[in-house]
Amino acid sequence: MRIIISIATVALSVLASLLYAQTPGFVRGADVSWCSEMEAAGKQFYNEAGVQTEMMALLRQCGLDAVRLRVWVNPEEAYGAWCDKVDVVAKARRAKTQGLAIMIDFHYSNFFADPSRQTTPSAWAALSLEGLKQAVGNHTTEILSALKDEGIEPAWVQVGNETRSGMLWDNGRIDWSKTTDAAKWAGYIALSNAGYDAVKSVLPQAKVIVHIDKGPEDNVWFYKAFKQYGGKFDMIGLSHYPATDWKNENAKTAANVKALTAQFSVPVMIVETGYSASDEALAGQVMTDFVDRLKALEQCVGVFYWEPEVYGWWKPEYYSKLGWNAYDKGAFTAQGRPASAFKPFCGSPDAIAAPATTHDPSRSFDLAGRPVEAQRQGLFITVKEKKAHKVLRR
Image (cartoon, rainbow, N blue to C red; front, top):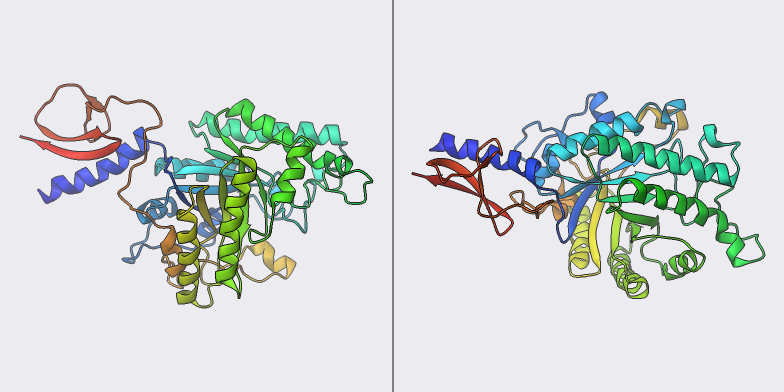
């Protein structure tokens, strides 16, 4: 009987990846874009029992629902061939195998894009605004089509990363030197909408996210202007990195989630968060407080930890060339295991989300996930009320 149960447990995991897509009511996710680069550098990851585990499988075991993966245009020009099309598709394939939903985060740059830098890729540097719109559309279509060709359809797509100051400078900068408000926003909105339209042309059902930083601040003004001057979005994405006054900052961000939904009638997702790993117990307390606040809000549809898998002060080789320090908000211990800050993101590891397509709930499946029409004797998996159950028929 022990052997049968072990086989059934494995079969449930297989069936989940074959039949289901992760679409939970409150998404618990992680951006693990560095994982393949870390693995190439020799880093390994372990579950709580100390067993070495592949990253996507580990996230699934922990009960996460989704991963977020960033995309750079030509990172090999300086950084190295990470977060390009090949790397992203490979990681997305691994995530799909584990039944994890996927968010794609387009930076539209060869390196990190954020409010302090939105650098146009060198290959696009000479393009006019119209040329950049075409480049954004082509790049977005290329990446999403490559994923779709693999049978991978991301649930969410970000068109730009932390675009409070616009994107693809200078054509897409939110330019406060302009004399009219419409002119200040025109380039950015044109480029953002080019990304939006490209997403919908490949994945009509995907939710398109416009993402900015500073979750605790009043951000209604940004999306109000963005929408007023023609910007399109299906969902709002925020970054939230609490610091010393973390409880107050957590409360402000939660309040802002409610305010944004009330104003624009769209869901809000925290697409990046994290806290200093210098005090593991405190990091766990901060993240527990924040996630609990978000779960209590019907307006918030999920939260993603940013690069929790970083441990042992690992940093990309390119960071040394820039003189940068290692990321200090990883949520894994020095032994490469999930730490306290990661625990609030962990749901039920046995949870199986709602079907991606309609299935007859009366049907059973064998251990390979193949439909079984007859009620034969043996060990089967049945789907009832959107949950998978092991059944031993004698």
